[in-house]
Length: 457
Image (cartoon, one colour):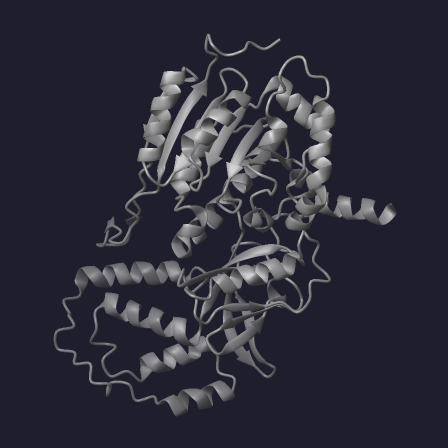
């Protein structure tokens, strides 16, 4: 008991802004060229290009720290880069050069003769322990055309060489926005093409606030469940419901680094258990208990696998878009697995059946929208909001029509969130040329009681 109490107190006193052994992190390599998730352990390694570096230096560093690949006597390693004020001075200097210079690149011929530094020379510099920044400066000094280029071309050349010879790794904290952006950029199909602005609007329309009991149908690998639990902040409950006997996977929830208090608030229960029991029956609790016991062992095995192995398999799924970035975990012995999504207790199920949920979020592209909505909307308390996400508009339009006919909700609204990113740089401010055309559609409304529906006792 003393060891368990010490672990709980350590979890409560842990600084969530600083990484620790066993936490999940989001690694941004070369300013978004590669994005991957990793579990920080003493034996974990990351491969960037031909270099395999240990993740040990990242443990105990604040989120937002930047690291650079360097080569030492024991091989390549990640060295922390301390930010300085020189970058601001360089930007101001470049801005003044932009206004005064009249050079252009028309007279420059790219015939591979401008660089006098050969590959053998660079390999020799690496063997001598020369840093990546020094190699970049040597390439610039030995380029015959660098001084003839414009300031924009010079900066582009410098960044290109820096990414090759001195790659940077940004240590980011996994939370709802960063995880959704990473998935949408690399594997949008895994989260149903849910964009981060759509996720934000979804949480707002569902009125997810502290001490809320939120009913969720999450078939997007847990991104919606994690976002709801993050906003609840360890209060209230988020209940994942499902059709059949097997809960939907919520692998993404393990990347949020939730505390034990927050993980206890993430529960699951089948739709059969949450349906209201017809009046006149007395074995409702016994039936629920039988259903719980029948699936308890199977659900436990599905929701508590080895955390390190799961993260490794997930990073391997990213290998199609990140050719040279992989994770090798030595052993899962030191990391404490995060167990979120336990079976809802009978007391909670009984309370939800009597009082209803405070809000409902449905993100199930593989299910019939109206079929699942007509089962779940009656589980809400009266005047409770609900929101349904789908990649396409037509299923939501049909569901909206049926909700109006059945008089189950008011304030029904179909919306398409819109997000446009802008590049803001000196003399180069414009919208991004490559952007997503759509982030999905949302159907929102408020549950009411109809004259043909049974009134609560």
